[in-house]
Image (cartoon, rainbow, N blue to C red; front, side, top):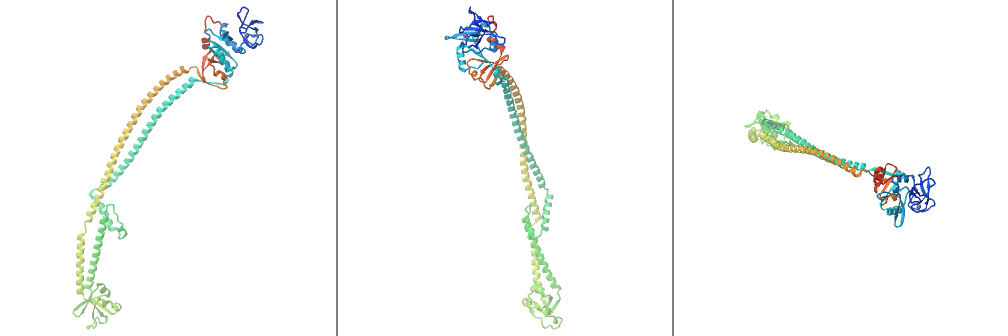
Length: 501
Ligand SMILES: [Zn+2]
């Protein structure tokens, strides 16, 4: 192809020559005539006189190509390589036999593959200046270091999380124990208060008993009495006491009535009739006294020396005088009546004496009940008090264990955390330098619209982005930064035989 440029033609003696003004030479590959182009703008070069398909792999020569090739000695540039009867011009074949192809324009994967097969030991330098804007790169050292530090931070955070969680657990347990202790102390103090109130000396017990009994007499009959309830268990005593009281009262009333009747009879005016000395009483009184023998005296005959109507009548007969009271006086024979009343009086008196004798010593009984009440309650409360005291001792010892446990965990964990921090600091340092060595010069990359063909090469590929370093593709997602100086030193080592023209 006529546009293909070459730096070397061959003269009539078979020597490689560079273009010169109005120069002619022969193509070392196809043997056709080459014409020198020595303009002011483009680099001087040879090109075929006629459009000829000389080397289909060659692309138009640019300043970029020329600039690269010029770094090698003349005899390492545009080297004709013959293989299986085919000839191609390699951009560079250095003294170690490595072919370097400088590629500016896109080529197909099949062409890449064919060239790699033909040249064997080779690599590519791609002009990537124009698609650099589509390349995102990031330092793998930076990325890996960031990850290392993050891992380290997480690991330390994990230690610290464990520590804080455990300490929190301890604090919760301690707080719970302290609550239990507080509540037990409250129980103790309440029990102590009750014990003090139940602890009574004999004088106090007697005083309580008497005060309780004093209420018995104040209590009204009926509802109050029926609903009497005593914390000292005195209810039955109370009921007995009241029954006795009632009996005594009714006996006293009975005695009084008998005595009243006797007195009434004794002071009543007499009335002599026959040989009996009657006593004049009111009709109603005679009915009440149920006198067997009574008489009715017409009033006009009261003072008569010769009473004519003083018949003796039975009580039943007397009742028939109910409506005739105004006209009569009434009298009784006091002897049998007084005899009966005196007999009744003796009988009631003996009942009273008997009742008095059978009244138990309520005061002693009540004192004993009251005492039993306080002793029982004191002992019961004391039992609870002792139980709570034991519980409190147990809680206090548990609290002290917990506090010790937390303290020793805290101390041990501080040491663990500290040494773990030191250890991980050391490890991080090691990992850092390891990472820096391992990932030095390596970059992760993402290439928007990457030229697909360059991701499938068999030979190494270097991207020239117009800086003093190249990027070597080392993996589908990694690049290695290679300084131009090192690159050249490796593939164009200085030596006697290499001479840049
Ligand atoms: Zn040619």
